[in-house]
Image (cartoon, rainbow, N blue to C red; front, top):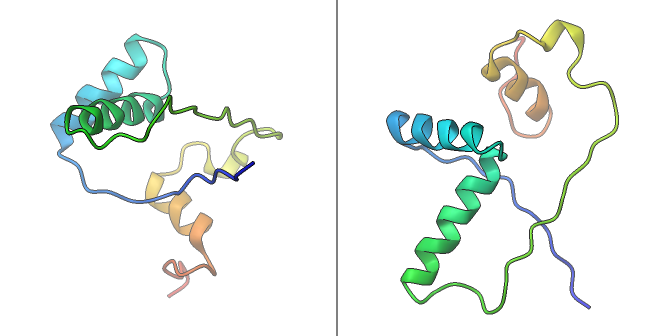
Length: 94
């Protein structure tokens, strides 16, 4: 049995395309990640490059109470900098 690891990455995407994809995800009550992965799989299949067999997505569940209170209304940039602090991200203090 092999191991499956998800990769986190950052991509630049057209603002209008992103907004349309997020709106579609919301209207279908799907996570944005699912819409993005489904679109990528469809494209790869059309190109004859999709992996063999079905692609199975794992459900990710996290315990806790969500974001800290002081971050609930924070801009994504602030949250991202804190998440990557000490891991190659920008230091918020400098």
